[in-house]
Length: 48
Figure 1 (cartoon, helix red, strand yellow):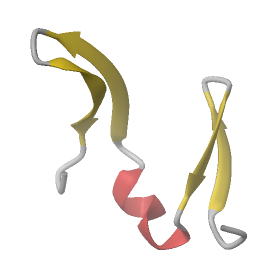
Figure 2 (tube, rainbow, N blue to C red):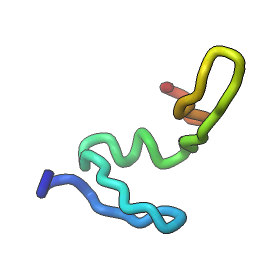
Figure 3 (spheres, rainbow, N blue to C red):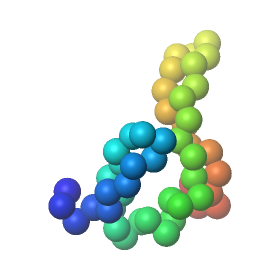
């Protein structure tokens, strides 16, 4: 959306809703592949 904060992180364009920027500043998105499949996981942050 136009009201989202736009950032480039590690060469990837990311849109973050302005109301949650302070809540997600310390998280990391990672990709994990295992026996149960593959997908994105959230690491870090105190309220995840």
